[in-house]
Length: 440
Image 1 (cartoon, one colour):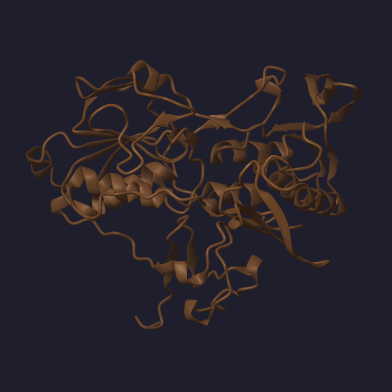
Image 2 (cartoon, rainbow, N blue to C red):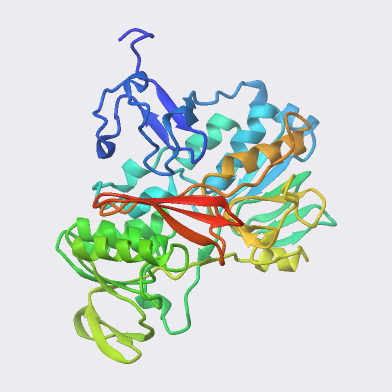
């Protein structure tokens, strides 16, 4: 195959998904071997929903021998330390390295630092994915490519902004700039015992759950009908499992969608085989012989199942931030333009941050946040970050949902079009559309 014929890759600027011409996108009807130029213009990213025009050619960043030179590293000072080896952490490393080939970068992560797209976890069973197929690049390979010192399976246990020092389980690290990319952890109500409830928030947890499910159909109860709960219910059901989805609201995603839309989503899920129980509260979960679990409900009969999955939201682990006396408000408070925390030379991005009092737990803004931080740290490029509501895309096969903009509590919803295949709605505030919604 000549250079012109070589398979090319294109990266989504919003979420980081890579379209590989050799693999195509079979789930969206794009066969393997389809050139990017031949993809229809109305094709959208299967993860975040942006259009083809939001993709750009992707070439792995090569690291020069100078960038890996210890003597040059020492000459440039202490350098950048990143806490977290997930999508946000690696986005920050890529952004810093793209603007400065010499600055030392150290990444501290509790896992191996392997790179994957978290949104793919909620559709991985339907795709018959494996850990190997989900990992886009190992942490070791990324570190070598970017000239990053990777401290895997290492925990950050303390932070002193005054000393510019991070304390880890493998010793102290001095930093010139620190980037917190810790993500968020599942919120587990007291009535749900941790040892009996799966939480699918990272690749390793998904791998363990998949191995536990095995090859035979299982009875699965999912607690929480938000975005993650709905996507997992759809995915498990499609993979052949018997799924019961519980929520305190009357319909799935009722806190985000208008009643007409959430009811339509409920009908689609139940029509596909999911049992939905709304206005239901869980009293507890117990286990008896042979691993059978019992989910006790308030004012309803108990449910027996093989596995329980908790999808009850995310919270930021603020222990490190609070110990360092960083400002927090439903996350680590950051400057909306620079992403700097309340401490000098300490930045944060991704799921762990709070902007104007609201958590920012979406994939789309991460690359822009990383670029803003890298620009400020290195002194190159456009240093400002402009926060805007990201596109929210529910990847339920039975009924996809796309929401543009942020719904307002007292806004008025109107139906734009309503057919058997698709529902379009818009919300207005003072006569002006503030967000739009598409189902189907």
